[in-house]
Length: 269
Picture 1 (tube, rainbow, N blue to C red):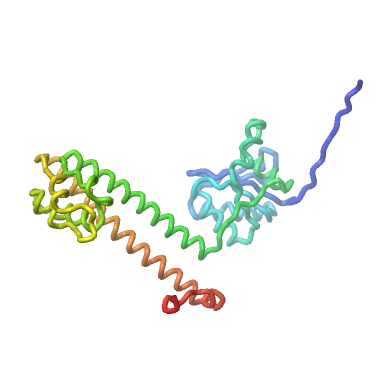
Picture 2 (picture 1 turned 30 degrees about the vertical axis):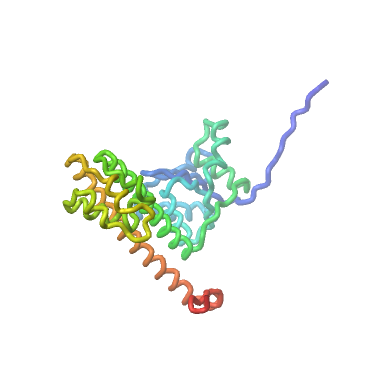
């Protein structure tokens, strides 16, 4: 039985397309599949404008680039501002294809796939949402740092035989914070430390005092003092970030009548 060779042709969707392989120190751009259609550019602002001018000289209208870390963001904004139709592509879309075609540059693969309309655009939020997301991600990072700080404080307290974690649910809660502040300020007597118990704490002063028997390790005490200072600093940063987020959200709502209509008045709750 004879086999027939079959050819499959794909329609060109974007005839004036370019592909950009994003890097941390340089970007590779392809406007075609020949060697002379590839050019490397730096990452500075003047390099971005040089790239834009080169793309215009090649009559490029549509551009696809990979979402590599955060390196793409400034270039993306520059190219959009210069009037190009730019899409951001998840690297997973081209990863498998690259593995089979190692003889062709990455940027050329991106250019070819975009020319044939085979790349899907990644979702990008509007500018207001993007700003809030930046603050929110920063806030989450601060919270994670704070949680790590609390874990280290628990460790140092435990090594000093100060089992605050056994008698309170949260060592940085009302009772725990008061005890830690008094302890790092020089008070080491368990009974006097237990006197800082908040009235809503389930454990009695007697039980708390039994858990707070300092073994005299000054090295751990010094480390605890450092961690507490870091914790307080992070807490202040979280509060400041919350205030900034509230200010941004209020600004966004105030300039949009539709959003104002959906704002819940706290006085009506």
